[in-house]
Image 1 (tube, helix red, strand yellow):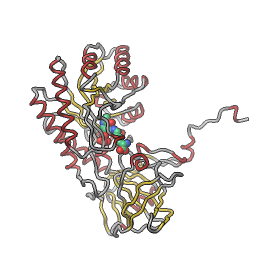
Image 2 (cartoon, protein in one colour):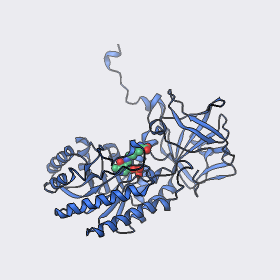
Image 3 (cartoon, protein in one colour):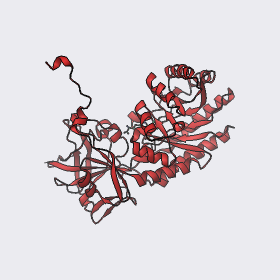
Image 4 (cartoon, rainbow, N blue to C red):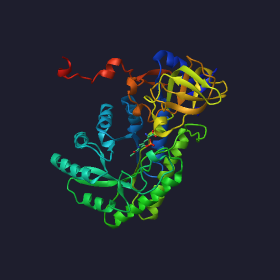
Length: 437
Ligand code: LLP
């Protein structure tokens, strides 16, 4: 557990803000996603300060990590821009009242409809990722009579030290144009188009990365490429270095504070400034796009312990009322988490258990072989660092409802996503007339 002012143990109880986790579970039910507003605000402020340390820049929140209107409003209030990756995310930030000029539209295969929607909203930047997109965007921008600002996603060919599913800049990735291959010609093409305005480059090397050397290598290669563009007379105003900063999940990971996370941003800003100066380049406006590091540790999922099955000497299962429908990350990546029994948080975690979900498949686990206090049916289990890529990847598998989300802000707590009803689950079901007999 990575404790902080808003996440701590008092009199044996896990506290989130001013609330006992068990109180939140009793009031809002379980399974329940809890998000800590103060933590999110603190990370946002630290990142914004860091990105402006060595020049000017912006922090764009990667909505894919956690997409709700309330948290988008919170992020915007702390000066964040937005990275959106679908028409849905675009709609969300518009609903949150974001300044659309501070929105970057990502995606390796934006649909024609999404391109239209981005243009209709007058977003700041499309991050062009394919030749198909380039053609479509040029044509559609032309039809609207606008000259659209674009960044180009480039692949520096760096293999970040993380799990394969979230590496994005290794050679032959589905993302971006190769800086050692087609990127130069693509950018020359964009620079010659009437309806597109080349503003800069985007690089995202992957996610859950602790090792700075991957960023250092990406910055070196990318600024070399900026120089190559400059030699062709093409100016790169903006450098967007993506996100990907690794967070605390278990005691094997570093226990960072917001300040320490921001240090990663600061060192990226410093290196971009240094490398640009070294290569005789104008200092670019730097964008970073963190998702997980802003919301990951802000999130705690609360469950009620149900069935317990012990296979002595083999495994003890503690089953909860959630599972892969609220957190598919073990099933997808064998991700690891830490947890406590919220009402016994000061007791020793002297059992090793496997936390099982309630879905009909054996791989539906929250985590395997996790240290935990002695669990009894009815206890409240709190799983930490679930704020990123849990709610945003949740599903209605087995027709389980996606849990609601409650935002805690000190001594205030309220829904930011309401509970789904059975009716919600069937909302879009229809029965063709011929089946109605
Ligand atoms: N920018 C781009 C273009 C991205 O593709 C991503 C994440 C980010 C920023 C934010 O990265 P972050 O700071 O959150 O690491 N579902 C996976 C993670 C997929 C990440 C996808 N892209 C997981 O649960 O680990």
